[in-house]
Amino acid sequence: MSVITFVENWEGKFKKLTFELVSYTAKVAEMLNTTSIALSIGSVESSELDKLGNYGVKKVIHIDNDNLKILDNQAYTSVIADVATREGATVVILSNNNTGKALAPRLSARLKAGIGSGVSKLPVSIDPFIVYKKVYSGNAFANVSIKSDIRILTLSQNSFDVIETPNEASVETIEVQVENDLVKTNVTDIQKQAGKILLTDAEIVVSGGRGMKSGDNWGPLVEMADLLGAATACSRPVSDEGWRPHEEHTGQTGKIISPNLYFALGISGATQHIAGVSASKYIVAVNTDKDAPVFEAAQYGIVGDAMKVLPKLVEALREIKSK
Amino acid sequence: MKILVCISNVPDTTTKIKFVDDLKKLDETGIQWIINPWDELALTRALELKDEPANGIEKVTVAHVGLVGSEPTIRKALAIGADDAIRINADAADGYFVAFQLAEVLNNDPYDIILCGIESSDFNCSTVGGMLAEFLGIPSVSAVSALNLENGEDVIIREIDGGNETVTVPMPFVAIVQKGITKEPRIPSMRGIMMARSKPINVIEPAAIEAMTEIIGYEMPKPRAACKFVDAENPAELIELLQNEAKLI
Image 1: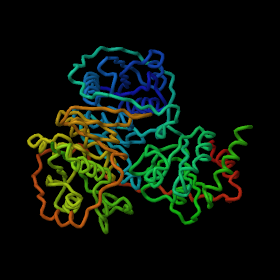
Image 2: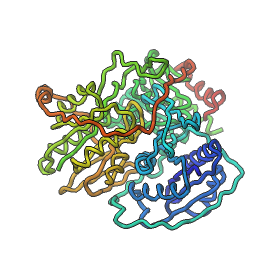
Image 3: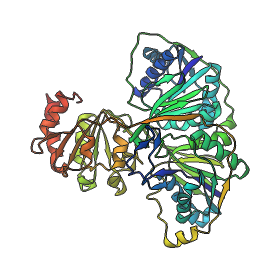
Image 4: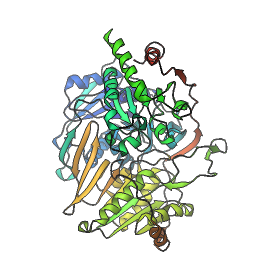
């Protein structure tokens, strides 16, 4: 028996979400009184693979195969399912990011395994296997019993603490056969978002709404984000108007995020917007309307015009950063 | 070429969610049911592709797993412009159950392009599209924000962490679509609503299979602490609180 997690890499490197995933996997394995494994696919140096042991997994399996250079959902599913089966995995854990969402359902069908998706906590119980997850876009939560022998979990980003444990994992590199005709995805172009903090990775997010009046007024907001090492985001009307790119839209139909701190500037806080950010640990709102629903979700608030308040926030931040 | 769009029937996204039966069942009183927002975007994109004669799309079908009560939502999809519909007559127990039922039907009635929304706004699982593709043994592309056809070949943009990739996969395939796939959902016209009344809904009985998961109870979110207000004339105080009280910056 084992608990296995698939860990993605970004140009050969892991990031915080990897270590959250590995910490979570080690804890689930502890609950089940079994061993934990991290499976890495791609070209990753051994010094990077060694890091995974620091978060509690006992074994790291590494696969580097030319036919797995790009993400083909069928090829990856086949390889992960084979390793999970060989290792007798009863729980398979992936991130609830784009890659995890692409692979977890295929693995579920392949392994006849029920899914608990977007979990943010350890399972409520292991026999029966019950997980706690958000439903109705964060307006409620559910306890879901997974009845299959194998279970798949996808872990929400920034929701489980990284736990460092003195531990060394064995690293095993294995060869797999991936037939050429199994790979059906042909990548013709890659457009990287260079130098920007990824919205889903960010611990602080500065977001602007209709109260910003125009796309031309984003300067101070971007400066504030820079000072905080934060990502920028926006509400739906802003991306619909084309003031900001749709990748920045946070809310029910846009990005669902869970940073430590979310600034909602000139955002009234419609249910659909809050649905995308309600998992934030702290929400700070600036809005002219004291009755705006955003203040019901916020811990700190200023009733005022975001356009007037923003420069003062930037100034105060500059001051503390210069100290 | 034929396109299938899988649609889910969900409470309107502004619904105040409440439960009955000791938090075991959704309180459906007064709920407006709608097409899941991402599925509606998928349907809109399918119809845009069909509008372009060069794409050679014969028809756009919607498929739904649900009981007769969800027919108004199917009729809305027909009013928006789908040509016909398939309804698998079963309560949608979970994503695995839904995907399995759809695969059973599609094994005998193949489509070239199958579109699914990236998640449903009720259970937020993001599972049906990928599962369906695996059951059918065909490619899936997830987090799709653009889908075009060029000389009969698909050109797809998918989001990856930190950027976008342009990809192409052989048909048939499942595209799991998100924001960006189209600008705005199409709204039914009066003519569309009239025409929808006579469009066929093919009702199919479900295959025998058990769901993999079961919701055993709901919980409401814990109320957040009341908002602490700072004077608009002195935003520096807010920064001070975030630094020294909440210790966030």
